[in-house]
Image (cartoon, rainbow, N blue to C red; front, side, top):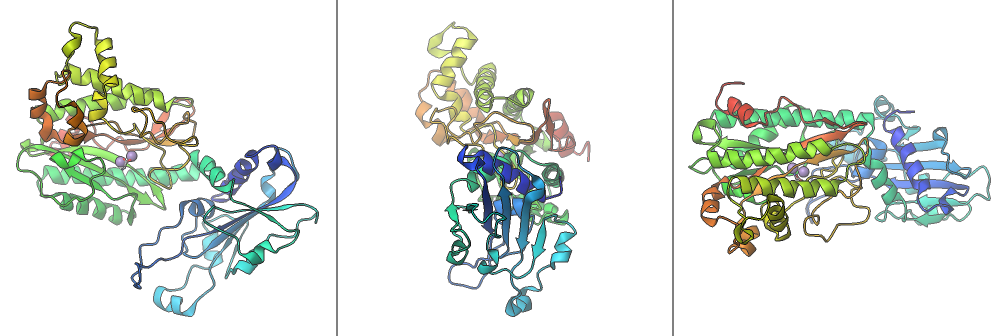
Length: 485
Ligand code: GLY
Ligand code: MN
Ligand code: MN
């Protein structure tokens, strides 16, 4: 059974029952009770905030109707085997409210939704009382109601047959684990988000090359406009349009400055959301200099590109994300040594390996590359399930958002970077491992990040970020100097 999104309920029930063994393998009626997002207003006004379905609910229901609910009933015989045919998933649409219809129109009818959403059933007009667990065939069978920690089943439901037990212990964890491995339909939606995102980045590069944009906010408007025109009304996160030194702030979202007069780079980290699925892509575009990278911009850019390509070589099932992160520091250290920004200093004629180890342990690479190499991507830009044991406290790893070995079906971002951020560098202003005079000449570069979105496949990966989105210096310059279109 692979119908969307019904297959997600099967995956969830499987995960749910594999948690807390052997208790969970005993016979029981498992009843999942979920309430979707409602329309919220700003503080004490009636100004509506943009509606976005809660991601776990979206994953299970595929439904964007505010105020819906979802239940899954599974009468489990016991043991490790799950019978998908016995997983009953019901989507419950909200009751029709006349005033709501007047302002916002009629919600879709169940028959309409059933054309694209495959569930066991879609019902109209739920009330908490309508969501009673079904009576199990064996009345002695215990009923376990699973909810998210934020959702309490109404007492009327709890007063149901055979005194059900309420548990918030497993559902969220099961959802996080189940959402990690993307299903074919999810990959299709992620690919579409990436395709629109690739188009928006390419168009923005072209416009910067044509000098039709003069500011970070015009760049944001250009990007968002392209996405909306191509079917993606929402962004996966607030776009980052950092020109020059703005790019040294990792999540710079003010986007309110005009482009600097002198040549530098525009760091664009932006992605469309398509049917709630995210893209998260970063490219850097030369500003000024006739559409070409300056020497310093090119050198830093090529080091970051080398980091990314070295990371790509390691992406396959079983790969250790922490090892990839450590490799990024190694490649960066060697790159900055090569261009003379780092130096052996007091280590004199020590081997390059020894110098690299020292640069990393001194925190010098972290001063230029402070974040993680990437994260899971899905219904959330920093998707769930990457940190079952929490974050690492180790300096090189502390911002990693993924600490489980890669598996087929994971979608990850790979986003190394190199930034000139005075605050990050402050502890090293007197470091003997840095050529400070040379460093001063690179500061205008601001920051470089290169980010693609990869699906982990059986033998390696499939890059969802379109290959026609320029990434090498030559391909970017061809577009920004008008040699290609
Ligand atoms: N766009 C946020 C990130 O790259 O994680
Ligand atoms: Mn990003
Ligand atoms: Mn990212």
